Length: 302
Image 1 (cartoon, rainbow, N blue to C red):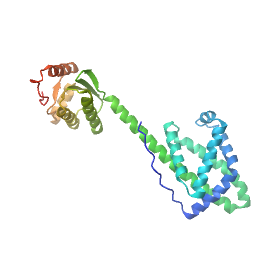
Image 2: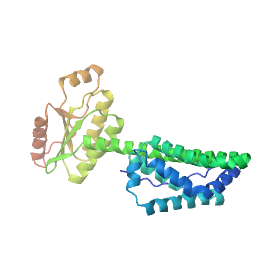
Image 3: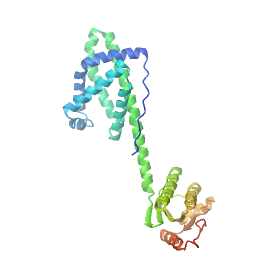
Image 4: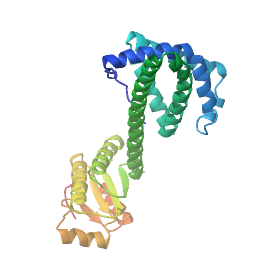
């Protein structure tokens, strides 16, 4: 899978009243952090997706993780050093996306955190309702920001995973097989779109160069549809191979595909075609067996 370097993340922009609320919230939270974290831990132990993870961690690991979380949040809110906190949120979102954790599970933790914090805000509200309201506002500002950052990293990672899987599937679906020295077979299976045609051409040319091939059989028996665009892509791949000194013989054109190409007026100009794979191999073998001085040029179609 492709490794992506995480750039410096954009700094958050909070309104002045939000900054005041964040600092009030932090003063309240830090004084109650141990009790709140314990409540959240007990709640997570009842959640099917988080319970196994917690059971696999030692108490000192959980304590160290909580301590580190406090440190980077304190630094962000009080010292305006947001990058470590942003990087931590990004890493968490990416980690849980790779681990297959549902994003909805994070909302369960946030709900447990809000409940534990609000439970302790009730006592403050009895003594100072105004401050309790500001603390609640600060908590909401921070949690909304954290969930947005987690969600962005989670989505980016999921998209990258899907992209990498698609690339892997495309590569697997177009293998290059070496029959003997200088002779390759490329079985093409599935739909051929513009992106896959580019990968096919790149793979073909790379294999010709790396394996010093002079003849290639491209079998399209497994391609369900060949329209004018696909025909053009395949012809261009064969032409590129010819420029590298290799003959490409295409096989596996079914009667239905042949009729379709004739009907729509598509042509495989310059591409030598043979009915089946065995015939294609024999055609390339004859070409490779010719003396160098009398060797046919691979430019001829047939």
